[in-house]
View 1 (cartoon, rainbow, N blue to C red):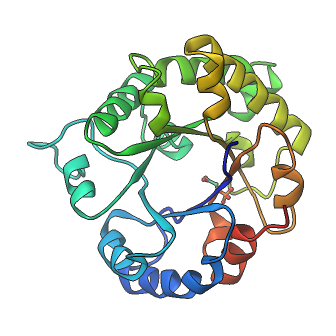
View 2: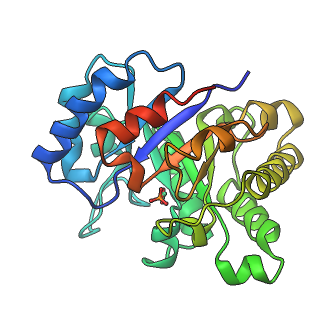
Length: 250
Ligand code: PGA
């Protein structure tokens, strides 16, 4: 049985003190959640949040990492730094990284392999642009992002990989994919993972949906067979909203 994961991607929001305050407010609201709960603060907020959530059921994640472990990479953050701060999961290939900062599938694959080699779990984001969906290419884009993003991984590696399907046109826009549209891509992606690895690996892989998930649409999305959680931006930034998401009515 796959467990649900409710993950907050705080993006470039909150200063360290604000992030710590949000984490403190979230703690009691999610402590009895029957889903796994994760938060991804910005790099500089990670130490403050780590301190607050230490020993709790909240999983600490980072939003990105460098393709190298150390050296002359001005402005980058290494997997070793994240590990030392207690980060367990790194979100890689978020659409904002792909489309604003030009990350390629190849670069993302390097990061995936480096994270796994250093004992971090990966939440690999995939998803199509609006024009790709309108051109009937949504599945093909996701297949390519999966194939290239997961290149070189073994079945054993996949135990430490999760996927987040986030149609780019639904992120931060208030437009959510219908549960049926999201389910169709989730099922297709699970099929692709089965083809790349095997059926047992595909069945065990957590695939979250992301893109304008909110307390009032979470239940119908999570009711879909192949949707195993949510990667949530805007609605994860206040404690009552994130608490409601983490405790959605199953
Ligand atoms: P959103 O962002 O919930 O604000 O649409 C989701 C994401 O980008 O992870």
